[in-house]
Amino acid sequence: MKKLVFTAAALMSLGYGYAQDSTVPMATLTPAQPIEPTQKVEEKVEIKSVGRIHFDGGVLGANNYHNEFVSGIALADFRAGLMMRYGQWKSKIEMGYANQALSVKDVFIEYDFNKHTLLRGGYFLHQFGMQSVFGASAKISMEEPLSNSAFYNNRLVGLMLMHQKDKFFGTLSLFAENEAMKQSANKTGSQGMGMMSRLLYRLHREEGNIFHIGISGAFETPRYNKEATLNHSSYILKTYFPTRIARVAAQEATINNATFLYKFSPELLVAKGRWGLEAQYYYLNANRKSGFEAFDASGAYAMVRTIIKGSPYAYADADAVMATPKAGAMELVAGYNYTDLSNSKAGILGGRLNDYSLTFNYYINKYVIWRVRTSYTSVGYCRDRKNTNLSLIETRLQIKF
Image (tube, rainbow, N blue to C red):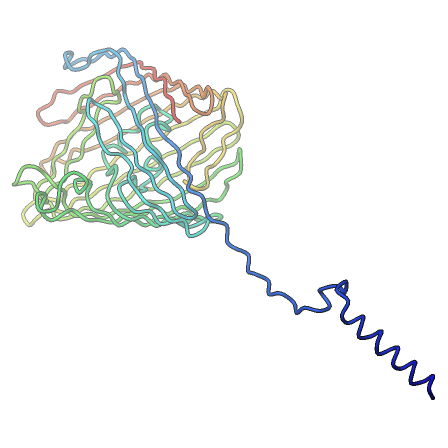
């Protein structure tokens, strides 16, 4: 019995000593510590400079107005600005100098909901056909088709919702006239307002195999005019001869006593291997006050392009246009444009224009492009303007960063 008691006492003593031993692992003695949640990594602000420089030189020859069509050289365009990105937010500020004048270009804020949908607000190019997607640096015929100059609004103040996924691409814009960027509403009077949209079905978007078809539409109220009798009761449609060396108006139609206008523009883009075609038609109808005939106008262009050195044509999903050819590529572009701004029933003769062009593009690297263009432009059926034919050959060295 004594041995049993002694043994029990020894075991109790050993157990007590073991419990007091500091070498026992802490994990067996302390409760589990709470795990702190992982902190979200702070987004970084990305800022980069953007800009471009265009130097032009050319020889011009016309049958009339010889003192206006003067050969020479020009700083056709200079841009400088900044782009900022923070997470899903993006913004851009850009200024430009052209035609001996400084002006505001893009100023906008953008929110990307996801990789397919975005909302942009500010002063920028809203989408109405293919030519509205990009600026002068990406014009494959050096100067844009003159029908686009006549029927497109250029930059506007407003909002644009864009969604693109798989075979669908669409935009919807609500806007005020661009005069809102230059003067306050108390000086312009009631601002012109409108909406526009571009919708596409993109059947093929693979390299060397591209096909999309679509249509753009727009509605807007009359625009600002510095003449009181025309202010917000008129529209002015205008084109210039396709050169930046001599800035000479080719067509001009002033539509007075107007109440509203609507316009639409179907488009087609096709590419197979190193050959491509893009074409667009424009129609505009301006309704006028009682007693005045409505004014309608139309135009169209087509451009056949081919890569004579380089990879097949590729597609830019985000903008729904042909992507810029890769560095080292050489390209030929043959174009035709027709624009009719004359309507005898409405008593408005803005002129009828035909333009034929051939352009060579050398994509030296991702930043530098060399272009050479020759064209023949004829304009007639204008009020107070002689029929004019212009032949030219021009070259441009452009740098974009």
